[in-house]
Image 1 (spheres, helix red, strand yellow):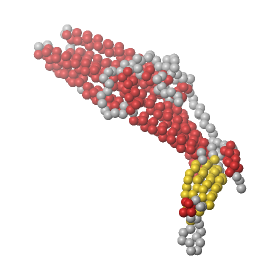
Image 2: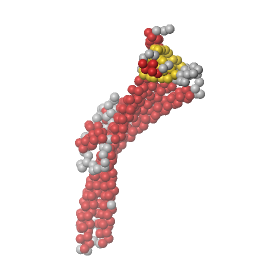
Image 3: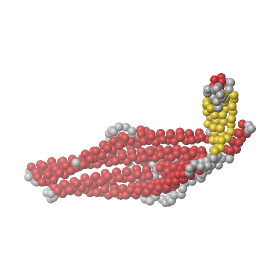
Length: 456
């Protein structure tokens, strides 16, 4: 009969001989270009900058802080991180012995004349699975990757919230600027209509020209409700992002200094910085570890079990302390021989899931490269578009001024003045939109390059 010391020695030898089944994770090769497609400035990547240094408007910064503090989706992401932490702790507990106290009843043969026959055992119970093939270790590895993935997902949620808040803030500023532009144009047309009405009474212009001026004013004023609805909807979105009921937005327009070109850095650094790519990689790590766990199920399992307590045929005797002592400690070994194909199917499913994770990662990398390229090109072209729209707006303002003078001199009809007013409103509208497009392109590039998330 082995002594407890010999059993403990056997346990240590078993642990020392453990071998982790399955391949260790290595990042799959992905084809990366030497530089992003699209114009970029030299220097550190925009994605490495803190969002406060990119979005410098004071009101926007305050709003982003409120969003990060009160957004419900971000709080849900934080709860998922805590869940993953608890799950990892639960899986790690499988490495350690499990001890419990128990009182059990065992059936024993009944002698003639006996009414009930039982044997009672009160004991401390020990159970410890020896991780011979690293099945538990692979489970821990997979759970740790799940936790890292949830942390990356939370970082991605923060980046998305910063980007969405900035986008909606700029859109709200654009809507209000467009509202001001349209109202100024409408006021200009009201003044012109009053002048036309006075001239009509004096017999200088016809009633048809007055009706044309009325129609132009009605067309301009009809734009206002749509812009007002858009502004109110954007204010409500910003309220929702902050986790509060709908309410008015900031009163002042956004102030943002836009550089001529954006530094992008190297594509290889994007793999480390983008939260969605980090999350996709952790999914690969977890899926690879679960392949090893599935393979370990084909091999024998070893556990050490023990019981230390007392046993008696009488429950009251057991409780009084007069029962017979028992002590046992020893190994339990099991080997699956036939499971109806379940072990093979489980392994094949794990391998397939690992392949899916690799493909999803490669797809995410390609999509990230596309997003960065789209943002860089959009930012450059939006700058060129904005410059042309500035020139167009200045030219149409001058054209309207000249048309007013020529009409006052009786050289042209009022139709040409109306046409000049329409062109000016269209030009100023496009100027507001082109400015907004450039701001949104900056947000898009910042988010695509990683959004300032620090590697953890």
